[in-house]
Image (cartoon, rainbow, N blue to C red):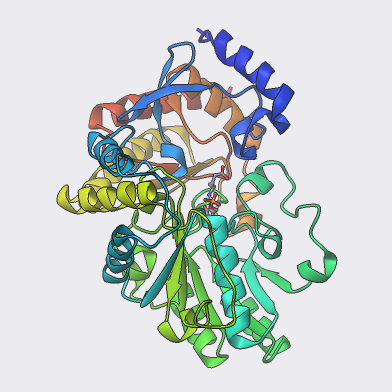
Length: 431
Ligand code: KE4
């Protein structure tokens, strides 16, 4: 029984008159699965309601930020009390110091940190800083990794670029794109060869240490450790883009799970509590190259915005007080047990990946270790699966090339319902 989404359709029709593609970020447009997006009217806990009153168990969580669940009273209270004293000053505030201290405490590799208003700004700034610190121009990134819409990084990018089948964006000068070397993820030999091919020319290697923008792909054993060894040998700045994984997969992110100290890290999402945020930080000797101390310029009107800091600090406090990382692992394991039991009955045409509260189901026999193998997924079957679940009130990311997210508000009942709906959906997909 198809849900009535007539109000969403009206809003979408009107949106198309004023906003390119009707959306303020491409992945929201459902281009990866077909059909038109619904319009969110409100959200609470693990649920989102659309403009027609239909409710969905939400596995996007605003693409990561809503890790406590939507409209958590603690976040609302933090924003409300901060807003009473003003919403933006462009003047240093105590909360920015508190956030900086918290980040350096939770992520030991970060000795100095600067806030931005998006993950894109964080990665753009980190790349510029690495280039300024080393005096080198080339960077290495990995096919499928998405680091925001940064000119140097929109080369073989994942997420929306991949979903729309255009991993390389128009508008990027060839001279700039040629400074970005793209390599397959999970292939250390390719990195070794590139570093030997361009001795003394590579400023930085940037990667998602756990990839969330091709769907979820995990590093092979030894891969991250090998990157650290190679970058130390060649004096290349190692940048972990933890915008998605930071403060979600562990207090100290993927670098804590692997015991690796990257030179720089980028963050976003969770540390804004749902408000616009990003951050980048790392070794003091590199970060001190930033203006006003050093020659690398970087700035932002709303960087360290008081409301985003209040919401982000409260979210981190709640994660700690509620033993959030352990609970997210428990919820992830419950979902995984149920999905794997379902897949056992459905044959080997799927690859399930999960780490903590992030997951993906690839419609391919696998393995899925890099972009090329992910691209073998059957997008039509995924789209059919997605829409079947949507009609059952389960909202997955509208693309095979995105990850799913759990929050502390998801309940075992949500997960049971989701797994049962997935089983029925897979029945449909097979036919
Ligand atoms: P923002 O500029 O969107 O805040 O962050 C960019 C970014 C940087 N690095 C990583 C690892 C990211 O995942 C992102 C943004 N993630 C996407 C989800 N695939 C945001 C969703 C969207 O583009 O609308």
